[in-house]
Structure formats: structure tokens, C-alpha cells
Length: 198
Length: 171
Image (cartoon, rainbow over all chains, first blue to last red; front, side, top):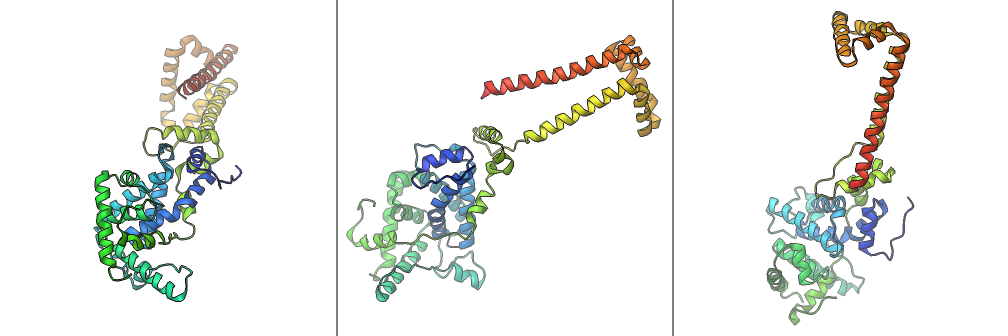
């Protein structure tokens, strides 16, 4: 079967191709969402290996049950919902409520501690701006890591992924009021953790 | 961009949250996922019709079911039919005593018992006269064997047709 270009094709249409058994459609869905899904999971578990395992589990679960997808919902919402469920289940099993910026509690060796420590991107600003940006970025990563996992998921979905409150409620399977409360508290805690930085 | 629904002092943090980079999984992530997608199993990928059936089986919300490949079923059925025809031919052209000899070679102490039981069972189903023909190797026996073989193949074809009609109706 020839490979199709999916550049301007919507998620819903790609799902239809995937449901028909086209491998290139599966690959396109992975290509579009591997980074957002992995980032969300990593920011919740703070361990490369664990995040990769959970992201892999998420995609395998979603793509093996692709025929259950209902096109009236966004594909990404469904995907994040599965990712969130899998991650929360993992965290409950591990009871990782607080995570250190120096590295994940999953990490047992010095190397894995370094690998799981917070790192931030370089934004292409002037050296001073870059330093400030790195400091703020690292501080924000650290502040997110100190939030409860439920708050972490909500604040990331709201401010990183741009989801509405209704969509977040659907993804995390919580009442709308609870989601608003979580996000409000998460913002308060982030402000407290980041006080004095900027 | 989401609507501004937070206090002013949260604005720099919100802006920084939006600038958080996406992180990437390790190389080969997609390949590892794809290798564990059941419906992209090579056998299913090569046979579009079989893939379609596979998808139907998952509609009930259960875990993916592994179907036995239609090719394997076809080969097994052909092998069974082939063995049956060879046996029939052995009966027709070589004679019943060869079968008895084969049985005797495998289990000599039971050969006579098996032959006797077989004869009795055959007489019960086909009648003593037909068994007599068979044992004598007469021309009527050949006709009887041919009738049996045609009946066997006819039944097999009938069952397959009924199954395919039922499958089409179900689809």
C-alpha cells in the first residue's frame, strides 16, 4: 500500500484510515502526538524510562482500540484521557505525590538521577535573557513537580495544551467544578513556589 | 490561545508555561508502538479482507481477538480431504486387505479386533451386502466408494456455502 501524505488531513480522517488498517495512518497519529503525550506524562512522573513506558502503553492501548474512537470528540482529548488514566494509575501504584527537582524517586543510580533532573530549553534570547529564561523555566518545571499529580495534569492541559475547562473535565474524568478548583489551587501554589523569581 | 481567566500576577507564569518545550521520547518510539499493534500483524496487513474481519471482531469492546489465519484453515482442510481421498483410492484400487495390513503393522495385536469391529460397524451403517461388495473388491464396491466420496465432498461444499451465506448475512 503506497504511503499517503497526511499534511492537511484532520485527525478524524487519519483515524478513519487507521481503522481501515493503514500503517502509515497509525504512524502519522504517533508522529503528531508522541511529543505532547510524552511531555505530559514526563512532567507527571519525572522519569524518562517510566514516561516512555507509559507513553508507549498509551499509544498501544489507543491504537489497538482505534475502532472505539467516537468522532464527535477530539482525538487528542481521547488520547490525553488515556494517557492521564495510565499515568495516574502508575502514580497511585508508586505513591509518588511529591517529586524532587534533583531527579525522580524512580531513579536509583547517579546517572539516572542526572537523567531525570529538570532540564529546560534554550530560547534563542540574549545570554542574560536566556539565563533568566532558563532559571524561570527550571523553576516552573520544579514548581509543577511539587504540585499534586491531579493538579499537574489540569494545569498542563490548561496552560500548555490550551484545553478548555470542559475538555479537561472530560479528559481527567472529574466534575467541571473540581477541575476549576484544581486549576485555581494549582495557580496559587505555582505563584507561591515562584514568588520572588520574577 | 486560551482566554485570559487568571489574575494579572499569574500572567508571566502563564506565559512561561506556554513556552515549556515539548520533550521527545527516544528514537524508535513509533516502531516499538507499531510492533505491538495487533491489527498491523503482518498476516493481517497482507490480507485486507482478513483485516476487515479482524476489525469486526473487536467491535464488542473486548480485547483484540486473534483469528486463525484462513490460509492455515484452508491448508488443513485440503490436507484432510487429500488423506481421505487417498484412503478411498487405497480401498478402491488396492483392496481392503492392504488397510488391514497397515493396521497390523502399526498395532499387530489389535489389528484383528479393529478389522472385526470395523466390519461390524460398516455392516451396521452400510448394510451387510455393501460390506460384502467392499471386501470382495467388486465393481459395485467401486461405485459405492465413488458415491461415498462424492457425498463427502458434496457435504463439505454444502457446509462451506451455508457458512459463507451466514457470514454475508451477518455482515
